[in-house]
Image 1 (cartoon, rainbow, N blue to C red):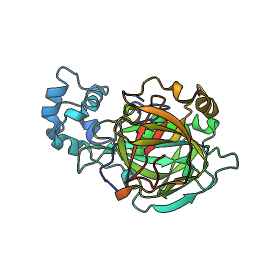
Image 2: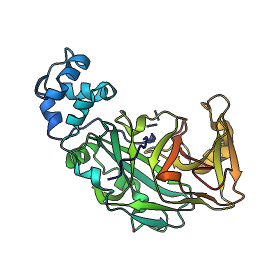
Image 3: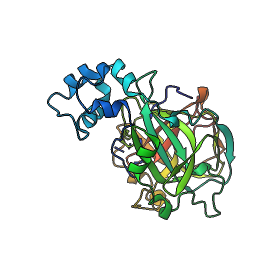
Image 4: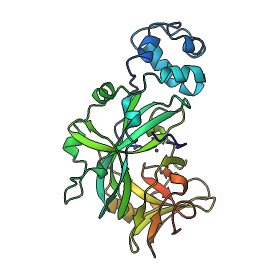
Length: 320
């Protein structure tokens, strides 16, 4: 399984979108369930419970909920204990193969994230599953029809896969013209299916949708993403001279605006850009061909939970 140092996508934004539907923490049967029966049941976590959840009565999920809020404060020994048993989904990318998707500009999609604890590091890792990688995307490029998205029951998904948390990114519109993606095991979400496509390292944050706007993070991605010459895109220049290109436009479950409306509003739509940052609309003078150096891409979300990829050296051949 790939456990590179990745960092995970409103404040997820991470997202993730917004970002979309947000699930409450859910816990695998095993150590988490034992933990809720009292302070001393899980020996490795007794001190952590005493420090972080003093006065919280055992039962009805109260200690579990408290500990989930304090993941960043837990000892390494406790985190490793809570990582057991390891959900099977944490190995869904082990046999991934590369797939190329053509004509992807403005494809509608969702991503589902299944989160657990990495027993080696104690960090929260989220396995990502994207509908854009399904083999039967229709001619209208809607890989995540609204009626099917609405069948996803987050609580059922958590129970089925025995994970710590579940969240959704999207629905979004994919903006590159073609891309390659690592495709692993296919999982079911309500009446939809989606294959494994990536793994995020969220540090000690459980929810992908809690990543802050304009704060970069990383995701493991070895394959190529391409915006064709002549494609019109939104880019953001940060105060350090980096240029970021919009890769995913946030629709959400109840869209506030269309992509055309967003682009027509132009840079003036941004109200929370950090000091020294600016947005621009650019028609690409050449292909922006992205293959992240070392297999780790750097991305960020804006205030609308649209997602951007860093451009230039280490990420792509071109800086718009």
